[in-house]
Length: 116
Image (cartoon, rainbow, N blue to C red):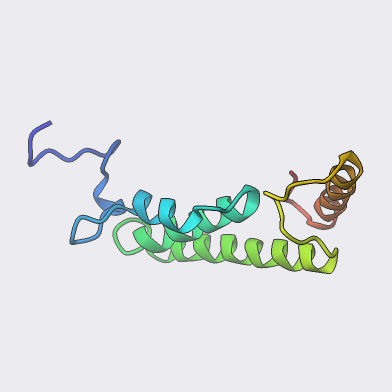
């Protein structure tokens, strides 16, 4: 591709800052060490916040807010259910893993409209 050609697949303008920093690099940096819903929700918040002014405006801000609220709800449910060091937790035995899985399934049932 030429230097003046827009590449909406590999380097879309709405995912680049004026200095050339790409949203994917921000997402990689800030989701390192996160897993599961923590990583997904955090990545989506960053994605929509980074692009809102160049793509969908307030709609992207609402999407970012949706993912932020989902992350907050997820973290509060983990705390409420006394789940720590998730989801990259190292389980000592199969019973620990089963207990963690049961808690996550219970949380999933409590979250209307969102299923794991």
